[in-house]
Length: 331
View 1 (cartoon, rainbow, N blue to C red):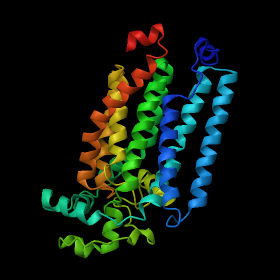
View 2 (cartoon, rainbow, N blue to C red):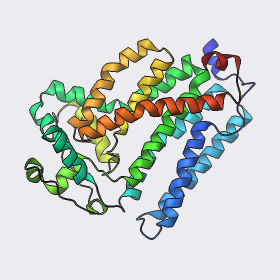
View 3 (cartoon, rainbow, N blue to C red):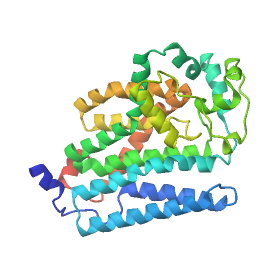
View 4 (cartoon, one colour):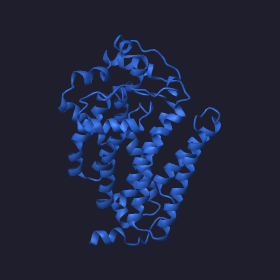
């Protein structure tokens, strides 16, 4: 009961303006808005993209207004939850922008072949098609968004003084990777292999396909045991929201790595070790289900570490503007 009262208790030193995670949304929105306006005649759905951005700004303003009327932890969590739920809307938006650029999968597939002498995404699932392996991989991949939710609520209940900082780290990281996806059109194996044909891939032939994905969105069937529960979850999500975009670097690997680093940073060791097996399966699954090349996953991991420390530091600088006794202990 005391915890519930604290959640809805009016905050005395509540922030008055937008939070850093909201400024990350605004920053990305403005940058992509400029891109849309400069390429207006080439964008396929410019009106819907502009209208979507207006609705996001209106929603943000409304949530800010409600919070200003009664600032409390619960309403701050609502602000965070709404913006993070909209990350799923921003994802296919990257396809609308990068579909105008020539596809670069042939380069990444060739680099993969040079580094490993094969296409791991092509041979792994076929050589490890047992029900157990398939379900473990798909369970890991399906746990991506639930992992983010678990980490944010861990901060909400146990490290609330750092909740805004953690939300900024995750949200800003998402938008940094989205910016890369906007200008680096790599669709991933499941789309590229389908476009050029498995026979050519198996022979080590990786032709350039130009703007093929501007008019095609077909992909290979998801590999693995098709009757598995987690397989069906991944396939359903793929059917609803997947697009030939956002392959390099793997945001699944990078964002989940950042979530693990957040837990380690605040000494949530028990939750860290509980999520570690799922995190490992998630990273492996990105290649297993042919969503990414191995170099995508490696790039996601390697870029996540410095990006985490950079964004965590930037979030701390914002908190120094309004230090509290609890914050001074954490900073």
